[in-house]
Image (cartoon, rainbow, N blue to C red; front, side, top):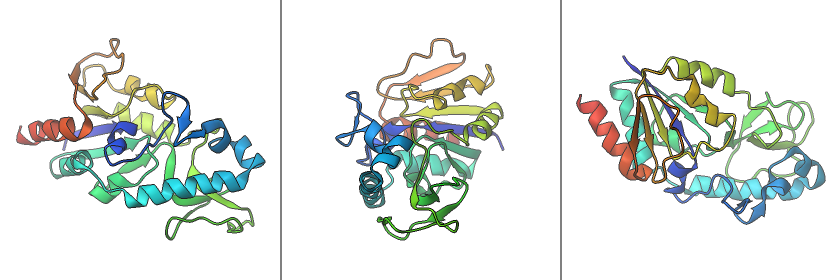
Length: 228
């Protein structure tokens, strides 16, 4: 089976009603990201940070996968598909995709405040202050904050090197190190970019641009790939 690697960004989740990253004004759901998405914010006001991610988790659990999520899951019938997502929701998994790598963590899990390798499922949307990991530290959202390492970036780069087909959906390629993953895809591999506003990727070879929102462009592309 040919290997398809898909990199998804905020644009695919936005069509399910989720703002998974900051807007152009630097705010995320009205919050200054420096006050809710950094290790320093956690040290200064852990309750605010916990409440913020509880709200994001509640929103994510209430959201439903859209046509783009379901179409990507359909690809598994004919291809070996790995989805690398910048998003912290679990919409890909709920749509049926079986190999999903979360670059920035997944909000439906918690992690130890002192050992990020210790992660746990969360029952429901609320993670309370006072909930401890097995080492006795406060549990926080399993999300990579600004200023923290991105542990999945190296395995993701390796996966991109193996791609026979590469698809980018709903990402402006503005957030590093995730934006650099396209550079690991072999130059002769076809690279599809689906977004209403195609990012500047003139340096990339074998590029096919689909200027559509995810729920239109992804089903169109999947139909073409599965009919061949």
